Image 1: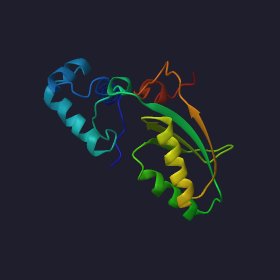
Image 2: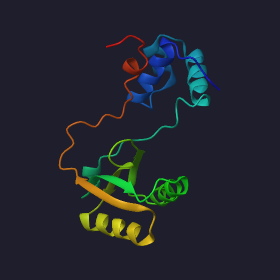
Image 3: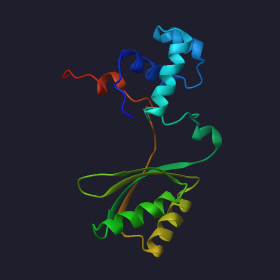
Length: 163
């Protein structure tokens, strides 16, 4: 189902990104609709796949000690089954928060969260021992996160005019 987004749809998505728990009546007021059409639009956006789900952002710092790393991974070959084997293995690891297949000097960029660096090392050793196709990896320990946006910049992405 493809839905062409209008300015009200974009406003709804923007507001829901900011506050996924907003009551429908309040959302409707913010975007200039009455509650019933607003709810219909939200349901239509969900059914069309624009809204994948709702969740809470958690503070890793408040939960206890943790280490975040970015890891560049290069595979030993570039056959489809190698990519599938690697992706299946990392999908089973709850420590992997994000995985992006990228172009350039390596194949994947991972974001990993672990309680301690020693657990990251154990994870990497287990992957290497299981031979999931890693030729080499380079890890970067995050020391500070001055910016961590989770909202998609809809106005900039959907604007047809050059910046």
